[in-house]
Length: 64
Image (cartoon, rainbow, N blue to C red; front, side):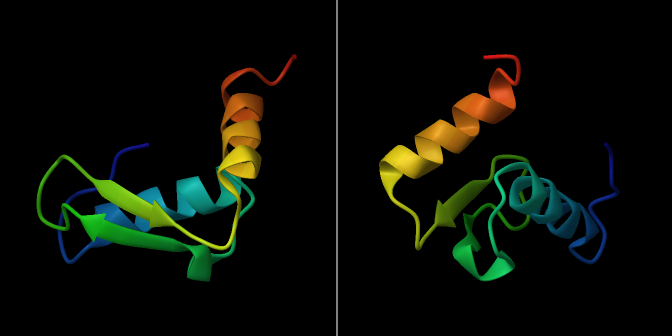
């Protein structure tokens, strides 16, 4: 997926991918750093670290 970095479209597209991929609510995801740069840092809240790790593992290895 590619999205032009105009008017925050790329950031919104990336937030959507994270939200859907990790089964999170939009309110749980914050673009913490990198609004105008290629390097992004997101803050995920209202989920334990263990739960988040499990969801990431499931996305990266869906056959496990």
